[in-house]
Image 1 (cartoon, each protein chain N blue to C red):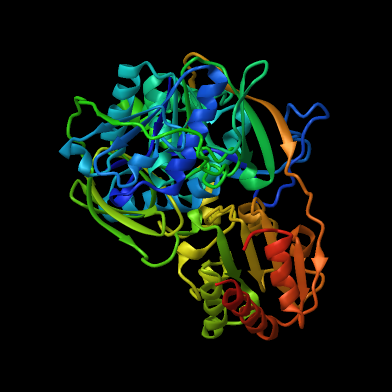
Image 2: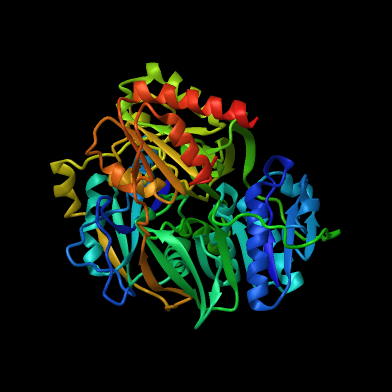
Length: 246
Length: 320
């Protein structure tokens, strides 16, 4: 079983997001980065569990500059066998997906796993793009993945419930909460990670299909009105007459 | 031409699809072209697509498509787009749409924005905005190619009756069988799913345990609202995971969000801050959530929630 896990680098979950004075760039000053939690907690850990049960290898792949190596090493410390970094700035989603697909095509992976979305641009695009570029099935927002031979049974999130589906390898899957539990790397893992291969591969092409032209603050136009706990009738009146939501 | 995929899971057009059609029509007006809606298989309610803005409704019926598979659906939508010369494709940002949006963009070499929440403008480029950093900021994207794919965040615009009834045309497509087999769809019946809910009642650690949730259910029932919870509540198993709203759970944007016994950590706010109106009930006057609320009640939730339920019931009986 050969599994590829796509990981991305994102600002940490509690980071305050601010922009350059002309609002066209993210202000990265002092920003702390982590491995995208969906990639780490769910996709990578489930890949490792599958490997432990069915034997095989887990490779992590990232498209980004050398500064991403610390995130990639964390993936190795958690338990991936080797890593690949495609050396390029991740310009558009399709550019990133093409780099991953180009690498994956030559390496016959059975399963390509990634998080359901990254917590920076929340696109949820890469999985579907890689699948389309490789002509593979794609299961999104999966909360479980069990393998029997080469047939996988997956549960995936749908509005108000779950869909159960079946697909044979190879396929692409995006992982949501429920797929696995976070693993904290131990000292041995961290030491071993330093010796595991991290191959750097040159990128192919470039594009700017879509670009962020401006950032904006989320409007904070809420001014709170306090209502006495003994006057819920007033709250109902306000919700009806002022907010017009009931 | 703008092509909108009006999805009909379980054979019925969803409100989100009417939103997408109205949205597609607004883009068509901006670009000076027509808006076509595509339905696949059975789609009760498709006679109303014209009313909400479709100039043309195309139906594809093929038994291969009875089973949802992002690969076969992408092939179908791309062929229809090609047949009618569509250059902008709109899908809803639903479980179905999210499975399609990336595939479509890759297949068509298109610029893409997923989870769009504004009607595009054409001022120095085709510009559309979406929430980024899990709701902490808004980014305006410029889509640089003639071919564009957009998934529309639910509840971003309301369906508007801006058109008139149109006839449904059948169209044949060539599609190979997919490899995904859907075995079962399990949905909670009787309540509106969280991502589509207009009214949401949500509770957190302040509840102290799962035993007393009846007061939350009672309030939700009085409003016809969907229930939700914070992450610690789902993590400790007090409530099912699908109710978890926040950065790592479901992101929602209902008209009314009532947060009960939830302190308002940044990760929680990220998933709910787009709600139109927020009511916060917490006994801790310092709870950060009050800084992001429209209405606040500083009180013991076990005292105030039943009172609110009573007040809603009274309102219902007068306005029934």
